[in-house]
Image 1: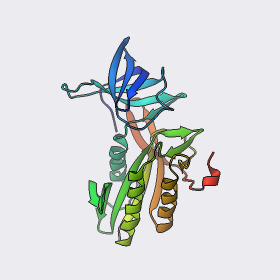
Image 2: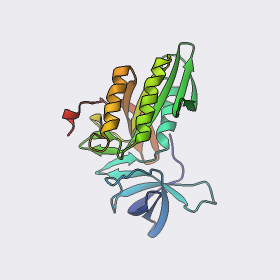
Image 3: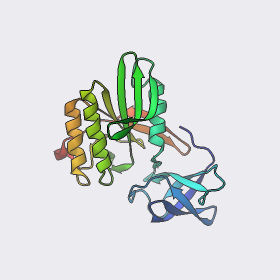
Length: 232
């Protein structure tokens, strides 16, 4: 996935979860933050950030904040891009050997899953979660309690009972990650539900991404560790 019309800036502050103030070309600019998560470990005053200029001239903010540099590593923090990157990745044949049809935002039960896949040999739901939280090269999810995320996992388990395949894909929006694990301290129920899903047959996947200043590409598998005792 490629971004267009990008600019580098310096992060200054985040008055609320929707906007940030940055220094761009020597001036203070208010920009839209494309991630409503806390991101406190990323958005530190002085951090280098990447902005994408909006094509909508009627918007209140001219730019979207999509990427930040943390300790020399670019981290994409655009919460909308993992789904798009996942669709591109599946369409390229990285998950299924046969040609499949993809349908975004398909409703099932009380949930709406990110991708529904169909072929002569399978019917599958894929839920995508973007991951930006990292500590000592360990990626964790979620960065805040998410009952919605728990419900999605429970619905994936229900899918299996009706003959669907079920996948939960964690798109880690950076490189250099040695493993992925649930964020037990932040939301224990999410981790417990994740373990139940794996036991039920939901396929759990985690992949890192190649990040540049203007692109993101799903790249390499990352080990998933669901054992709480191994958390650092």
